[in-house]
Picture: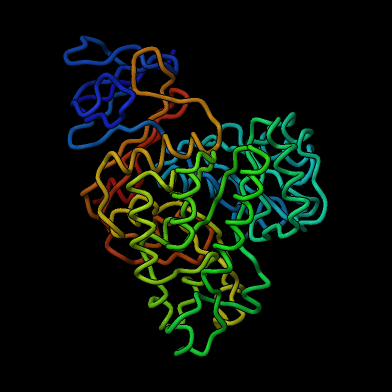
Length: 427
C-alpha cells in the first residue's frame, strides 16, 4: 500500500469541486481517496503544498527522442527525466530512426521501454511508411500495439489524395493523426521566417503562407469529408485566423502551438544562435501576439514543447547547416510565463485539458475517486536554469543559463510522488 498526503495546496481544475480553493489531497493506492481540510490521516509520504498549485497532470503532445538509433541525442530515460522536471506526467513521443516507428513492433518496443519511467510514454507512430509522405503506414496494427497517435515529424504530407485517404481511415481510429501544416515548395531552402529580418541577415525565408495554405487545404478536405482534424506546430497569425473561422463554421479542428513560438520572434535570430533554429520558425511580434490571443480565446487548444534535442555536432556549426529544433520540454511553464504571463486557468487548459482533448484521451480531474495524476508548481518562483539541472541530453537549450520564472515542484503519476528537482530544492 502506498499513500501520499499533499497539504495546503491550491487547486486549479475547473472540473474539480475544489477549483480555486486551498485544500489537502490524500492519495491511496494511486487514487485520490479524500480532499478537504483536517483530513485526520497519516501517509507514507507527505508533501507541503503551501504556496503551490495542483493541476491535473500535464501532457505534451509531441517530443522527439533519438532512441533507438540516436540515443546520444536523447533516450527515453533522459527524455522522461526532463519531461518530469518540466511538470509532465504524459508525453507523446516520436522515438527513434533505426528502426523508424512505422510498424507495430517498434511501437511495442517503445511502450515496453517506457515502463517504470516517471512519465507515461505515449508512443507515436509514423503516418506514412518511413515518414516519406508517400504510402500509408500500418496504422491499425500500430494502434493495436499501443500507438497513441501518428506524426511524420518534420516531414509534412503534401499529397492531397493521400491526406483525404488518411482522414477517412483515421476517422475510424481513436488515436489521432497529427498534421503538420507546411508546404515546403513555398519555402525552398528556407531557414527562418521570411521577412525584414531574414532579408537583413541574408537567409532564405519561410513565408507564413507556406503554413496557412497547407492548413487551409487540410481543413477544406476535413470539411468535405466531415471528419475531425488535428493540427500541430501552428505558428502564424494567418493560421490562427483560418482555424478560428473553421471552428465557427463547425469543423471539428483542434490545434497545438509550440511553446517557444509564444516566447520568441524572428528578431532573436539576429545573433545567428543555432538553438533558435526551429521548425516551424519564430515569426513576427504580430504572429506571436496572435498566437497568444488564439490560445486565450480557445482557437488554439494546446501548448506543446516541440522538444527536438540535438547533439553538439548538429548545432555547433554555421547557422545554415545547423540541425532543426530546440530542447524545450523541461522549460514549457517558464516559456509560457516569460512569453505572456498567462493566468493559472490558461496554464491548466493549455497543458492539461487541451492536450488531452486533442489526443482523444479521457478527462481527468482532481476529485475523490479519480486517479492521482497531478502536477505541482509555483507560477511565480524564480530559479536559474544551470547545466547541472538540464536533464535532457540535448545541448540545444535556448533558455539555459537564464533566470526563469515559474517552477515545477513535483508530479504524481499512478500514485507515485516524484521528488522535486535539484533546481527547486536549491532555489
